[in-house]
Amino acid sequence: MHAPKGKYAWTVTVGEKGQIVIPKQAREVFSIKPGDTLILLGDEARGIAIPPKHTFSEWTRLFFEEEGK
Image (cartoon, rainbow, N blue to C red; front, side, top):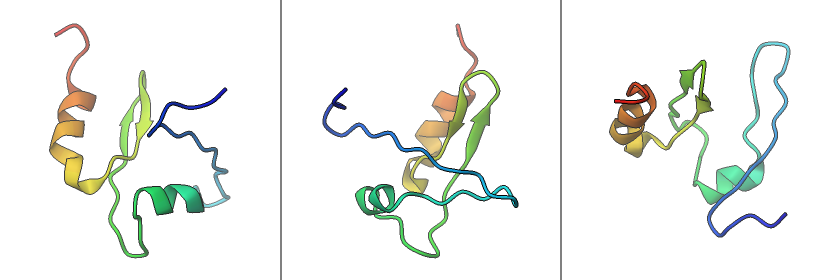
């Protein structure tokens, strides 16, 4: 299957300490550099999202709004 332009999917492995490595291609696409701060949002029903820091307000509104409202 070919992903639409601008859409990506990667797999990561969780290490013994619960750490993951962001794939090199993902770091390049999203300009993630050593020392950058990332946001980890979690929802038991929807899953985990790691949005860019500059989109924090929009993502938190979308991620934490209750479904059906």
